[in-house]
Structures are given as C-alpha cells and as structure tokens.
Length: 505
Ligand SMILES: Nc1nc2c(ncn2[C@@H]2O[C@H](COP(=O)(O)O[C@H]3[C@@H](O)[C@H](n4cnc5c(=O)[nH]c(N)nc54)O[C@@H]3COP(=O)(O)O)[C@@H](O)[C@H]2O)c(=O)[nH]1
Image 1 (spheres, helix red, strand yellow):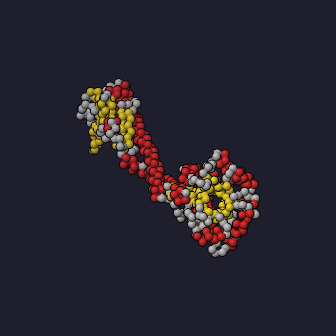
Image 2 (image 1 turned 60 degrees about the vertical axis):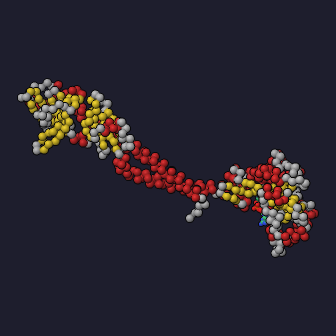
Image 3 (image 1 turned 180 degrees about the horizontal axis):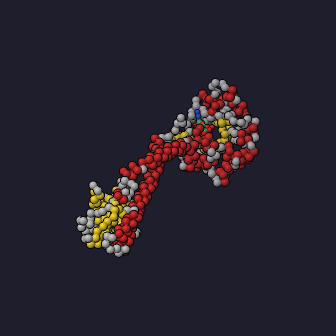
C-alpha cells in the first residue's frame, strides 16, 4: 500500500474538499429531483383541471341541449331525449325533468334535491345552479352527488371523479372562482389560498386556474412525501455522490502528494525565494588566515529544510540550473555588505553547473555585470564533469578568466579529468575532494595520489585547496604535503553571513 507523505492539515483539506464535492453533487441532484417532482405536480394540476373542464363542459352541453328542445310534459319524446343524452354522457348518472308539480320525470339515478328545496351552493356560468354533496337514494344505500340545474332539467353527477383528481397522495384543493370569492369545492379547505400566500414555502407546491372555466386547483406535497416518493432515485444519487467523494479523495491525494513532494517544493522554492546562502571559510593552512569563502545554498519552506543532496539533483533534472544560480547570485548580493573586509580581497567561490558553462549562459554574468564588486574576487567553481572537456566550455571559461574571474575545479579526483588534461584546462584552483582527506589516515591508494597532484599543480601554477578537513592531524599532514589552502569543519562550518563577519572578518 502506498504511503502518503501528507501533514494532518493536508489530510483535513483532502477530506473537507472531497466532502464538499460530494455535498455539492448530492445537492445538485436533489435539486434536480425536486424540480422533476415539481413538474410532476404541475402535470397533476393540469390533469385535474382538464378533468374538471370535461365534466363542466359535459354538464353545460347536456343541459343546454335538453332545454333547447323545448319539450312539453313528461311524454315519450322528453323521456327518449333524456335517455339518449344520458347514454352519451360519461359523468352524468341521472337526468330529471320538471315543468310543473304534475310533470316530473327522470332517467338514471334520481336526486333527492328536488324533494328538499334548498338554495344552490353556487351559480356557475350560463346560469347553472350547482349543489354539492347532494344526498342520493339508490336502493338501500345513500351516496352523495353533485346536482346541477338549468331551467327545466337537472343532472346528477357522481362525485367519484372528485376523489381521484390526482395520482399523488398529496394535499390538494379544487376551488370555484365566483366573482371575488374563492369557493371551496373539494380537497383540503384553504390550501389554495395558503399556497398562493406562500405559507407552504417549505413544501413543494403547484397551483393553476383554468383558462376556460372558473376553476382553480392547488396541490402541495411535504418534503417528507417527496423523499418517500423519490427514495429510490435519492438512494441511487447518494451512491453516485459517494463515488464522487472517493474519486475526488483519490485525485486530491495524488495532487497533494505531487504538490507537497520534494520535487514540487524545490521548483516552487526557486520562484518563491526559498533558497538562502551560507558561507564556509577557506583558509591558508599554515596561518589559518581566512582567504575566502564558499557560497553554499540552503533551502527552507513552510514544510521545513531540504539539503543540497535533495535539491541539487532535482534542479538538474528539471533543467532549472541557471534560474537557481541566478537566485544564489542575487542572494549573495544581499549578503555582500556583511562580507566586506578591509585589506585583502575576500575570494568568494560559487558553485556553477557544468551545463550552464557548456551552454555559455553563464556569460550573462559578464553581460549584466553581475558579480562585479571591488571588495571581492569571484571564483567560479565547477565540478569536474565530462561536459567540461569539450571546446565550448573551455572557450567560455577562458572568457570568464580574461574578465578577472578565477576558475576552480571542485571535487577534483572524483570525476573524469586526469592530471594531464589539467594542462589544457584553464583553471586557477584545484579543490581536492574531501574523500582524499578522510582516507589519508588509512593510507588508502587515493590519498597516495595527493603528492602527484601537488607536484603537477605546482608545475602549472594552480593553487590547491583541500576540502573536508576536520582534524588538526589532517591539517598538519596536508601542510607537510605542500598544500597551501584548506576548507573544512575544523576551520568553520557553513554559516550565516552575520556570523561569518563576527568570527572571521
Ligand atoms: N551548483 C551548486 N551546487 C551547490 C550549491 N550549494 C551547494 N552545492 C553543492 O551541493 C553539494 C552539497 O553541499 P553541502 O551539503 O553544502 O556540503 C558542503 C559542505 O557543507 C561540506 N563540507 C565542508 N566541510 C566539510 C567537512 O569538514 N566535513 C564534511 N563531512 N563535509 C564538509 O562539503 C560541501 C561542499 O562541497 P564542495 O561544493 O564540493 O566544495 C556540494 O557538492 C555543493 O557543491 C550551489 O549554490 N550551487
């Protein structure tokens, strides 16, 4: 299993962001489902109004037709027309005719209203009187119906259709608009008015008035009902949202890991000035007098310190060598006031990358007049590398040399050049790698090469600096071998410019 190198803060961020993504996704889905449900309620309202419209139209057309026949008395013609009309009707269950007390007849279900004279519940269009909940006597049981009357004819409409106006088990109300009043017909009393006034804001509502008849319909569903009705879809959506959580979690982990990885820290560090310089003294071995210092880069960001062994390979790998070196030069120019001294110039050694010398980009130093300071002599240290053996590098180094810079070969003995090649190579200083010094006591073969290096360097007039001197014995032995300069913890570790000034200048 992969181990993630994230801080608690990063883990918290990963969890918070993925949870947020899941919540946003889930909320959007829920919002869409609610909208869908609202559309369903709209459809229910339309269907209910269409049904009411059909019933009203049927009643109006039937009564208008029968009255237009101008029949007289309950004769066969009247009865036949009433039967014919009843047969063609979908909602009318009975028709009565009344001309005078002697002339009363009916087909289909008979209403009892005619026997109990009351005023109508309301008068609809075309002067049709409407009685709601009229009791009917059908054989041995009683039922209620809607009774409508126009002139001589009365129709009985079953109330059953009113009970099934919607397919959703939500509260609803059917009202009749009579001038300025809203007359409750069926359903939950006052629901229409409350929805209209926004009193059901927490519920999902729909309401509408018909364009052709004076009826309005409102439906209101509680959120609970919505969750119950849409539970399967909500569950599926929750699973999808959870998948979004897992995907975001993994992607964020990868992103944070990359973002926080050493590589990205280093690259960001170049942009954000996370590099600073320490200065290590270089001394004349006999007198221990400081002749110069080496500029050594250090890295610090909000995550902590990184050593050159971590960041130098990354800078090379990501091709940021020159950007990085420019930052170090710039940092030195800020530190320079601490390093000034009266008397001899201090030799300040910078480490340069072989590829920047090879490409010639290092000559920018000359073009832009960087590293020009009367108080210092600058040394260009370059690790011996195969690239440096090519002609263009030699040309570049010669140019720097002729402009007053000293050239030093760093870590001598670890790379590709050999003593003979040194004759052609334009350098002033040879820095013998610290492994030569550390192996001296063991009498290792490598350390036995030191006298040869000293001999040739004297011949070609190149100064030698021994690196990594940690003990007085090493210092004494190196002096004996004829080495003039040294660098190492014995004389001083890399330090901040302020301390360097205090101790050595
Ligand atoms: N191109 C650039 N390279 C740079 C720069 N800054 C540093 N570096 C290179 O990174 C390598 C490691 O450097 P660092 O960890 O700073 O180590 C240096 C000294 O601290 C260490 N040293 C010095 N004296 C002693 C000692 O007595 N004992 C001991 N064990 N270590 C000691 O040696 C390093 C200096 O080496 P060198 O550069 O070869 O003189 C290193 O290769 C740096 O070059 C940079 O700005 N640019």
